[in-house]
Image (cartoon, rainbow, N blue to C red; front, side, top):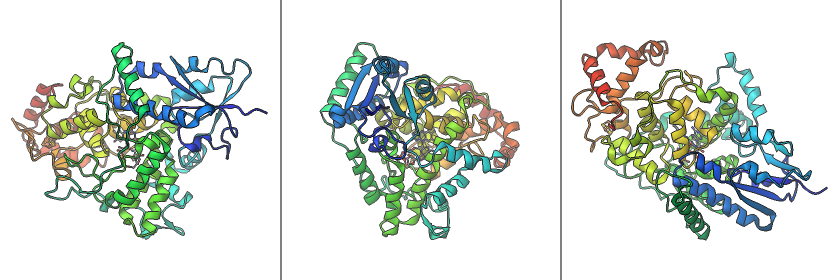
Length: 503
Ligand code: FAD
Ligand code: SF4
């Protein structure tokens, strides 16, 4: 029998998506790829993100040569026309969004295969989730279970080094007096004629008024081919992993990448498999090339957080998207939507917004404690915040956005994902960065001309949700702190006077 054509979505670009073993596509299956313009037309994406996805798809098509039919169409449905109508069947690996899964499930001619690009199947996760007391899911328990199951960083039944969690070694502030970490730079790809062609198309579509973007595009900073992705992984493991752990949560204005891996883009495009990333990191520890705290920290990010987030996206169900436990409804201000870093005085926020504008990327602490925290403190609509992160980040996809933004960053699920809201006053940002010293505000000031918007915003947030948060044992002490503030009325008045003006 002739093999069925296999349809590759734009985030299924690595060789593992075409591997016929273990229930994969038919051997030597012809490949279909659809570049659907409507995806870009629907929302205002970061231009670097549009560039990366199109460049990655077109590079993959060039590699596959005659084996692929590359269709440029208005929609996926248009792109599928001509397939199936003649009794031909298609296979596709389980897509990464609910909308795409519903779409492929509704097509009679499409056989949906298991997901690839993650360590666990949905069924395996479902079985683990059922065993958790009272259905209370926690990342730490999940992570330990994944480590055991995949024998990751294990010595027999025991965690390597005798401990599961080295977080306490991985929360150091940046080294004093240094403006950069002074680690070798991350992998940097060279653009080619496919990138030129993509840029040319994006210019043309923008000129024709077909699509509109936010942010700056280029030069390309992230891998778009398997070869580039492997080079990026190698460079990270050999030159940067060693310092990953210690300064994982620190921020330096002049060093946005610090020792982070920058691998979320190739991972989320399906160009790297998470198993190979964690295996390489473990090898580095076992050969003495990287310390355990860094390797455990990295394995925790990938085998723990990334995997957990993927599974929770499906586990929480479709209505998770609309959760808004704190009833936050304020629209996102224009300066934020437009990534207008110059309009912002607060140095931490202006720096993070400029990084997003210029690269579509920041590491996890600016995402959580600067950008997300601003949204939470100011009561912005969590669905709009989720949409913003999805559009503006080069590694943003529906599955990764919902748990990270609705749950982790905006606490809109009332604590299903995290045990407490992630927000802080300026003291945390001051301790973990060099951003406060040159700032026009002072992290210690709650009121007055130099009041730090994070410090004032933190107390205003606690005040607004006093009743709900005092019932949370991890927040009760912080809420009680409100009673000691002699200037609370003044603080609330000043915060409300600022409204949605850029801080
Ligand atoms: P590293 O710090 O080097 O970490 C290694 C890898 O771990 C990452 O490449 C990523 O694949 C994985 N990882 C770590 N944490 C998470 C997590 N919470 N969820 C998923 N993967 C994780 N990650 C995305 O991949 N796409 C997103 O759109 C995204 N949005 C986020 C939004 C918010 C508000 C927050 C708090 C986090 C978000 N993250 C997202 C998680 C994390 O910030 C990024 O994965 C990381 O910053 C990417 O940079 P890196 O590759 O250098 O990561
Ligand atoms: Fe940010 Fe406040 Fe520090 Fe300024 S003082 S950088 S606003 S935390």
